[in-house]
Amino acid sequence: MTTHQIVYLVFGIVLSVALVADLGLLSKKNKIISIKSALYQTFFWVGLALAFFVFLLFEGPALAQENTDPTVKVGQYQLAFEFLSAYLMEWSLSIDNIFVFILIFNSFGVKPNHYSRVLLIGILMAIVFRILFITVGVALVAKFHWVLYVFGAFLVYTGYKMFTADGDEAFDPHNSKIYKWMKKFLPLTPTDGDGKFMIRENGRPVYTTLFVVVVLLAAIDLVFALDSIPAVMGISRDPLIIYTSNIFAVLGLRSLFFLLRGAVNKFDYLQQGIAIVLVFIGIKMLGEHWINQWISKPVQVGISLGLIAVCISGSIFYSIFMAKKGMPADVVDDSV
Picture (cartoon, rainbow, N blue to C red):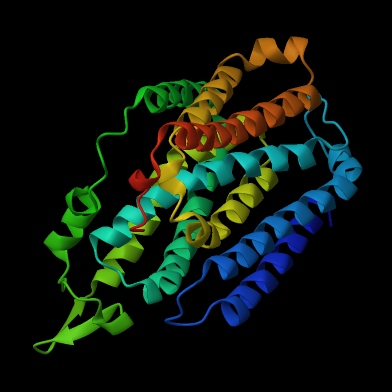
């Protein structure tokens, strides 16, 4: 068994145990998650990801020896820091997901006691879709290397649009193509079915608003994956890093939702911070051939990690500073 296979096995075991703990101990049906509980759950998932990072550090030398590409020199701890960079990238993008999730819940009038279960199912569906998406993306890059340049150009364009967006146009879930499709082809009811996803009305099965919300959550996350997965592939080309960083970030999304749902709309400049990172990674992918001639892969990983940390933390702190400096106390919205 190779070291990569051992790491996959450890990841699978840890993930299974963590999900059982989350489902059995941290999640209860129809329970409203408090800020305190959400904080503990966030520590749990972030701590688990950091523990996996430490595990990759220990396995780094063996993983480096398994490198089969003689043109690329892999540092002993390169994959570990690639994982940390990719995880931070995905984790920061998750905050954008949360803002859209809040809009979906509010638009369909989901009760707070149903949040946890709906989020869990939607996120598990999103993981399945992401695994399929990543598998296709990795296969395409392996067969057609030029696809990376397409991804790079897409990230530069996306980052530019994100940086210059004014944020005035809010996403309306009822006007989304996915909801219109469901409304056209599925029997829907405007009620939540008292927590059920499907009920019977007049003798026929109909789908409740909770079912609609679950589908929208999974679909919206897949849309976000169009940005995040190419961005991760700009950090690491190893499928192990791409899969694990994505799954860890998505699994922590639910606790992050409860922790930040009252404050996420205060991070006014986070979008610009993320946009700078996307443009940087896109340019790095476009200029990979020349960059590799001047800068080694381990150094590139260090630069990427530093830029991600500075841009994300800087944009969050700047948002808080500007809000405190320029926003009157009575403007703050306590409705979420």
